[in-house]
Image 1: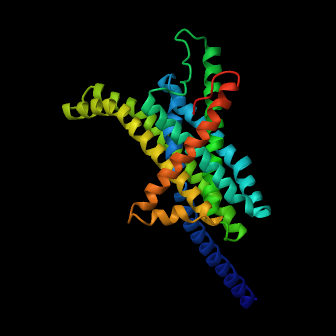
Image 2: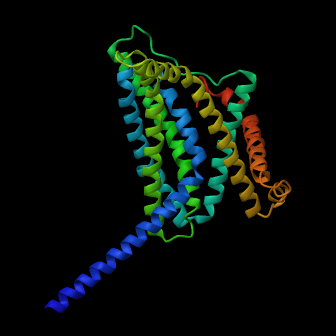
Length: 308
């Protein structure tokens, strides 16, 4: 009896060790896979705050929470199952999907660069009227949340395909666990960052106006309020540069996979920064070509082009 119990305990310990190894390996794979999609994460964090503009301060965090829930639904009901199914049944499609995502990133990046140099924007969301009724406010909030969730679906698809590309040679259970961890971690990272960014103005204002705060704290608060517009611009520049870099890198590696090695060879001509410069150039060129094709088509569509 005791020997049977000891054998059972040995099996439990062995299973526990194996589970710990799987979890450790999965965590490492998730970190590697998630890091490859950092550029899209930066873009996601830079884009989302615009959907909160125009709301009362007390509605900002509830709206971010609604968008977060929508992002989780996007990932776990649609994106992760679709990526796993395609990777399992049609692994050859991963590289074309990566290239499609890269073209989209390049287009978004080039459009933002074009806006910086020309001063023409793709359009801002209409703000709600100051005398809007509660029903109109609720409808406006739903519209903003739904728009943010639709944008998130595109970005989530890019993130998970890029992450999956690092996992294609792993066992299926590792792929599932790693993508789940990436989905949860990136969602928490993006919308946690968005919540901090959105509330920094309020925090700065609170420091600047709270009775009992010393001159140093008041000055810090005023500095935070003044710095936020510039910070958001810098974040946008970083996100755009990262998008172009990742887009070009994906295209360069895809070209090499299909036998076109010239871009990789040219990148090696400049030590240390050659790959970065070549990736940025390819991202810009790809974005420009897609922009040339997409702009006339978008003008044919009814209504205004949706702002990203």
